[in-house]
Length: 434
Image 1 (cartoon, rainbow, N blue to C red):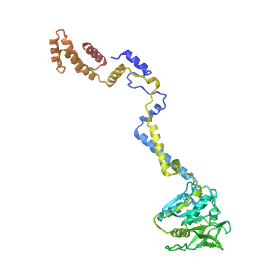
Image 2 (image 1 turned 90 degrees about the horizontal axis):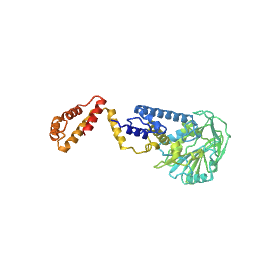
Image 3 (image 1 turned 120 degrees about the vertical axis):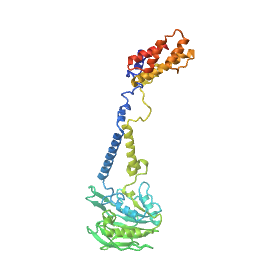
Image 4 (image 1 turned 135 degrees about the vertical axis):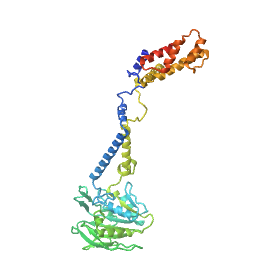
């Protein structure tokens, strides 16, 4: 019972869509529809692909970290033999809150009572404003541990590249000290260190294991902590309400040097010289190692592990959205399909849907009920009566009725059909009776 005119009209409107299609197909040239084929993939395939991508990203991140240099020598985040991350971790394990001094401008908070300024780089010299801030902080009661040598050079590190950094003596000049380079014989030297005394603490005696041939020229008010051949290696100088512990070697603070018992005892003595208490913060200067980026969300996303995790999660979410073919906006409808459909098209579509679904008998049952209601309404005959009783009542009201033919049609509509041709014939006959 398909109307050829309606079918032709529908095919013209949908650009030649196949008969029985209930909705227009997306434009094959649309970039969004080209991704929809991915939505047929099972969920386990999508989950497996996400896991593979996550594993690849993790391996790539690990490879980048392993191939990166160790970081600046004496850096608090550097894991190589020239770094000082072991010192930072040890200070935390001893119960001291730690803080990394970085980012512009160079500021030292008053709650920080001890600052390790280890091998400040000559590439990032101590400026006048930095010098004033450092002097202000020390005079207010801070303890500065300043270790500077002419240069730190290791031909072999954990990841291979050469580590070389020239020290900045301007940090010593701020406290009237001078670095004398190359005045001592080269090689490994163990030198006794005088204990650093502080009220309420028990001083410890120890030794320093050195590899630097440099020495200090300290002012008269400074007390020598370690000497070799009359040359001062380490000294402590009072400055206002605080003090400066200066060393002409940075090796004891490195990850490699900290493994020596004498170096570890000396650093422990330095920490014990600071009065313990709530809020006593120990700082590590990374500003003069080049960590001067202004704090921002993009910098956090790129430089911090938590930010990198957020970026990875966003990347996986975007990949998942593209992989599953999800639309990120309204459904795209080509211009040629932006037309209103005719009511007849919906009739044809429903008929095609019933035909494809094979619901012939349901349609015939609808025709039977409709026909009995249509014929019985003028004579007020109940359409719920049995077919024989209904036809008998209708024939008494209408003497010209072909009762036998109508009864045969109602019985056929009730029993259903097995072929499409018989369905069309019964539907046409019921339509004629109606």
